[in-house]
Length: 130
Image 1 (cartoon, helix red, strand yellow):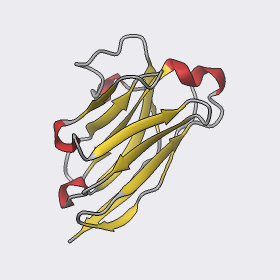
Image 2 (cartoon, one colour):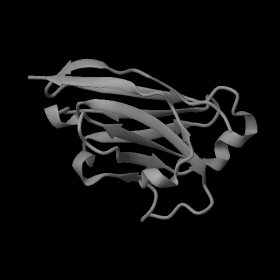
Image 3 (spheres, rainbow, N blue to C red):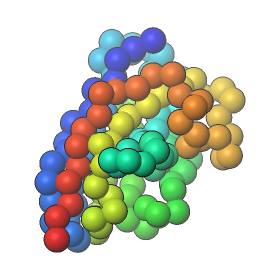
């Protein structure tokens, strides 16, 4: 178990960019054995998976709605995962959460299933205005 702390949220205009960060202080040598993903939740909607990355940073998975616009990456030395968001749309406005789960058992079908995750951050707000 370890904490996840998100940062980088804010307000941006349509078409703009933001980079979110998720750091795992105190994760020690466990960090690179965890699959890390970003989720988001807009008011009145369910929390949905946005992007995920394997423990080694080799394989990434994206929701169809963000493919080609968002990029997930990780730095295992800094214990940080990043979500670079470009060409933001009003529909991207939400609270963005970082989540982690042990890499064993992750499949393409369950990688962005929120019910599979046991570690969550507090979230960071992203607002997109026209």
